[in-house]
Image 1 (tube, helix red, strand yellow):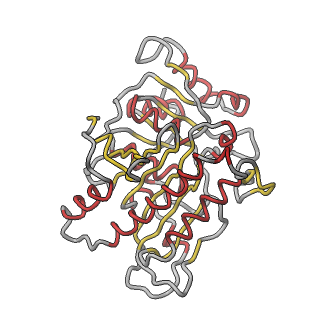
Image 2 (image 1 turned 90 degrees about the vertical axis):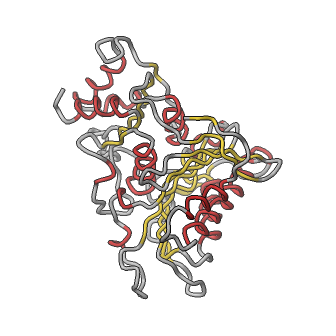
Length: 343
């Protein structure tokens, strides 16, 4: 990764990439630009959350049987409201909503599909830990159809994403995104004084092997022997480093992933085989695993479910859960070898 000189805005960067693609129409640029506006609104609200009545739980649970936070509702509403009118989407899928989000009939429709986790890590809101928004963008399969989009058109493997990325709301607000196909992964930091995201991390490359492992070891009682052996490998000295990896676990996926993307390492959320609520792990394939898998792959890393690439999984449900091992390529390959029984 090369630190970039301050000056290039995210809008300039998107337009430059559009000019390099002769088939680009500007629709994708409009889509991303409006998503960035939504993130700015969310960032502003996150930054003043302790000053207004937007902290805490709503008292409701979402489709994932998780407590819904007030900021979850706000962030989801902002993204839906900002994105539904632009004329570039045929539907949306949110971690907070059970079914597909249709575009109201009064608005024009396009050929893109947006899937997103409006506020990842929201259980950490009240303690001022970094949280974020994760997104993936697909193209509709039947682009010439005037009919309502079907769920099977949305349930595409992650390799079909045309763009993916995340916003992280921490000590600063950063957007990281990629459009794949060798375009690289780039990070932009929001400068509040000018209200713009400016290029700060150009061509991010994750180290081939890291020194950090990130996993919730409090769930060890739910793991099988292969998973325990895999985690002990990273904790021990009989590994590629010849010494224990450093343990770092925030409990906010986007924060753990962002750190490991920049510094190298592996994030793991295994299948909790003995937990009836999470036999396939906790994380959602469509709105969390696939977007981050696209980012890490473009940056030279790897994402696996323990038996193969996340990006090649054919989804069967909008809110499908999946085990996730993601980060530095060689570290993830080591984890995959344990889980698949090759090691």
